Image 1 (spheres, rainbow, N blue to C red):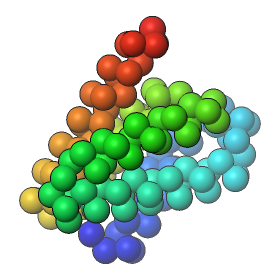
Image 2: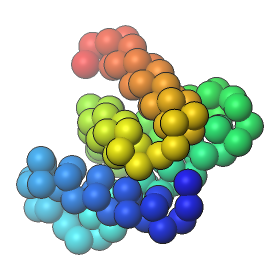
Image 3: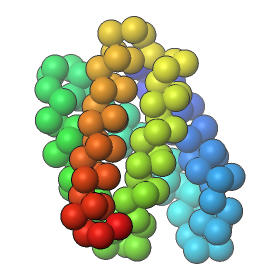
Length: 123
C-alpha cells in the first residue's frame, strides 16, 4: 500500500470517527483529530509490516501496546475497536486482494483480542 493511499485512509478514518463521536472535538479538539489521523497511519504501517513479514503477531503485539497507551490517555478500547472496524471497511475498498485479506484478518483478530481484554476488565 503506497503512502498516499495510507494517508487518504488515515484521514478518512479520522473524519468518520469524529463525525460518529462529536464529543471527541470537545474532549480532544483539533490536536486530538490530528493524533487520530497519525495513529491511523501507525496502524497501517504496523499492518504493512506484519504483512511484509507474514506475521500477524506483529500487529497483535502492537495492539496490546496501543491499548495500554491509549487507555492511559482515557481513550477506551471501544474506540480502538471502532477504529479498527472502520479500517477493515477502507481496506476492503482500497487494498489488493492478498494484502486486504491478511490485513483484515489482523484487524479482526486484534478486535477479538481487545474485546476479550475488555471482558476481563468487566467492560
